[in-house]
Length: 71
Image (cartoon, rainbow, N blue to C red; front, side, top):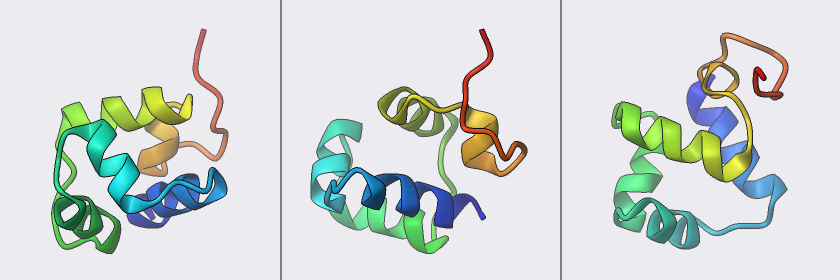
């Protein structure tokens, strides 16, 4: 679920893997591995993705169906 969510969030915003990898300071291949579930996503990357997409980490992890952040 995590991997599909980060792919969907990226695609919904028409961002390429290369663009998001640059924002995360990693290679496109490393980011691709996150989306494919071939590599665990480190906590700091989860936080960066949460901030980039303005969604909660819980949403990315599939613990919540609501993308809204807690206030």
